[in-house]
Image 1: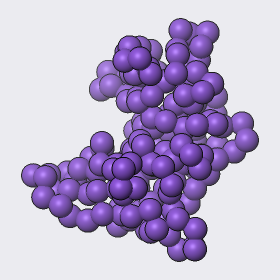
Image 2: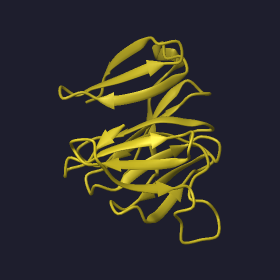
Image 3: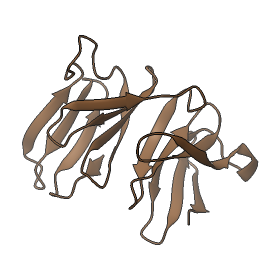
Length: 160
């Protein structure tokens, strides 16, 4: 779940392979189905985590593809990326105020820091920091990286 600068609520519906966009009061505004792409390929296959960047673009981790997909606020697919050195199975995703992206790599027990265009900057935390199968993540208002793990534990790391 995420929200954009207009107060819209964005929800990933993995079961129906849809991104649902709701008004602030919960009324449906629009849906982005898996087939919302300019190509014949579906734009996503198994969406699980969502984030909004500073441009209100929608970032979606698609962990069976595996890719990160980017959509305009209106739902048009504009890009996707996944490089060999990035996550095998991307899970949680969030952004900071500069547009950098944090991406949980569940299988390799790490959280990656990516540039706004998806290039790997560095590994933020990993198994050596006590991280185990990261799932969801967020940046707190005080600048902490908060990560949930597969068995429900919560880990907090200083981000900046």
